[in-house]
Length: 569
Ligand SMILES: Cc1cc2nc3c(=O)[nH]c(=O)nc-3n(C[C@H](O)[C@H](O)[C@H](O)COP(=O)(O)OP(=O)(O)OC[C@H]3O[C@@H](n4cnc5c(N)ncnc54)[C@H](O)[C@@H]3O)c2cc1C
Image (cartoon, rainbow, N blue to C red; front, side, top):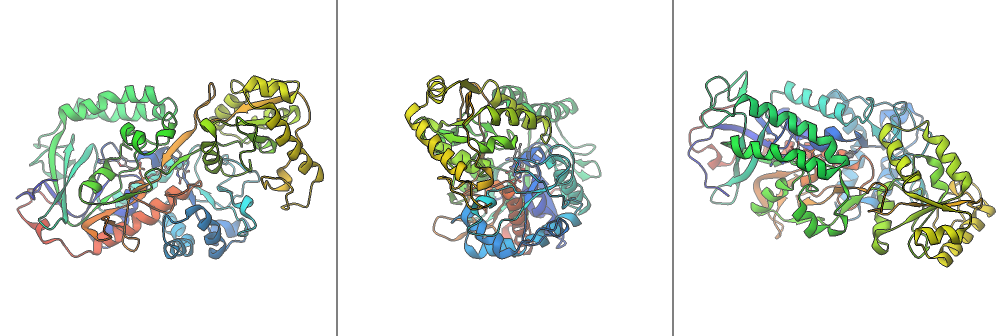
């Protein structure tokens, strides 16, 4: 922490650190009250949000659900989500989220984010460009608890639609009059004598102390700033390394090294004062190898669902100001079996041949079940008919990244043999355990049962239980770190503890840090115990709006106004 300076380079009512979904929503809500808002981002903004699938979990009767003829209620949504959310947030907050869910989507639409009520007929990890509403969690498997309803609302845009989600939010932020400082990294929070947060110490490539704020942005004509080539190189190299970082993290890390070097070499100090509050919305910590080693050692080696900006700095800044953290050991590990949907008829077993779980559950639930097994290893047993159908399905109903993953599983990740004992020996699975598990499964398949009433020992919906009895048999390596196929993607879920009514950062003793708020993956939120597709972005919108709204209406911190700001936004 740094002493309160006599002058600020920039001053605003609300300062938002991080320009992803949570930061954008915080800025929009704060600006809507008439406040001065400054949003800063280490890169160009977008973060993991812009790389994401753009699926927002919503229900309780959204207009898209109504268009698709889907019946849903806030109560059914709340009952299902309470299984996933657990104690991450209080029942009152979960209720507020579910009741406000249709209005939340309307708010996003008002800011230009498009959705559509076209219902996907298959259980899939991500619908293709023809469908934008789907079962994005384990709702059908929990039909006994709550009437299932599709609640994955994918932003209507081709490919992975997170890019469009962020583009529309960014456009709305620009229109709101908020000032966005790109290539600006928050390094420390500035607190007053009472521990209240009054500003942020940054390093920026855009300008330095004394740089005027003008139409050209911070560091306009005459202001000291990094050379143009350094700013361009920083922007381009970060953008180029973002995709490789997702699929080949080692390569992405190497490509990103010059970006960090440019920041060290050309970054200039910048002090930003916050009259009412600072919102930390700087993402999670997958990219921080030390934090991963400390909090989630079993997940190291997974594919990061993140950008190199998810280095835990938002969480660190809050913790240094006295904030407490929780759920840092909760990491979502994804292992999707569908598409192709035929694989949902297979049987997932561990090294001892024991059944792992209902294969039709959501990919993160399957990932969690595999993590609990010896060495986080699992294989999917599938017979000739299942493999043939899966291959046929690959040609349709998949996007390119799903095809790559499925092809990987069906080729390098698969061994086969004419007998169950033979295939078990090839994969290193206990043959007796596998034979017993398969026999119990095939008996359940033969007995059939009305739709929804399952005889399956793992409780898989009856319509997905298919006898696996036609040789040759295959075992597909679904381990978290398979020997040859692709590793499982991982996403951190925990962060700073916040007061649920306001989003204000909480200390361990339950009091709050004045002037400091947190949102999105920098904070504990709805998805901190367990993630289903769309729940992280939904939480970013919910928690970002909450933090922005409360920061904007907070009583100004007296010491934040001290000194003479050199420039004012
Ligand atoms: C491939 C992929 C697919 C996904 N699909 C979905 C999905 O469909 N639905 C869903 O709910 N979730 C999905 N997720 C997860 C989801 O995208 C993220 O959890 C969510 O976007 C986090 O949003 P955020 O606003 O908290 O952080 P981010 O969007 O990561 O934004 C944080 C920003 O803070 C900036 N920043 C970091 N540190 C600093 C600092 N010190 N100073 C200044 N700026 C800083 C970063 O540059 C970044 O721009 C997916 C993730 C990936 C990678």
